[in-house]
Length: 218
Image (tube, rainbow, N blue to C red; front, side, top):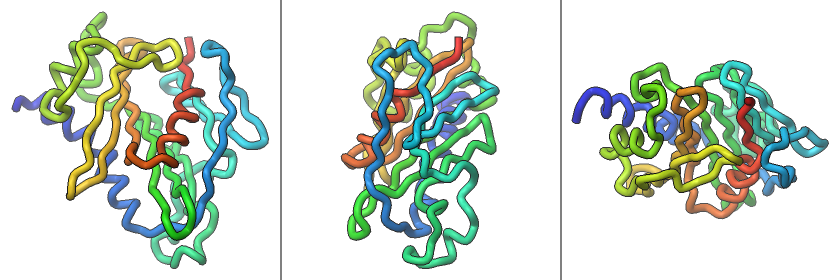
């Protein structure tokens, strides 16, 4: 395995390790969240009473997220108190503090059967995430991520609201939860959207709703 592939794998696993750590802090009850995306794929999503809009000024992308999610880093005392004593900020938050790696965490479901959802959008300052200008997306993913994913398509297999994307799966194992990665190019930079535990229905519903509102600025 060459250094570039090692770097790619390390970047992809960084988010997974973060979710595993956060998942150990415990959780509390949060019901399913409803987002109402616009049907026009070219339209910029608009906030409502139920959803807020996040804009990454550095890279020019936006998406809607539940309005009751805390906008900022998870407070430190979330790890110290039992679930029944935790504030709403511990149940869902959107950490925007690092524009290179924006992530949302939410605990979904009923109190007796909760799931940890994680939605990450990242770009890394590494050669893998800065491909040559005009590089074919699927070819680049196959070249640099073949050691991590078993089945990488030879061409984009997803339309991210008008942007060609490659969606691949990292299966669940006894040691870690599974996840999906969605790769796309924007202004010759490679981005990854990582979705945690996509075998859980509540998680998939949230991810699909957020992805349906994901837009890249022209």
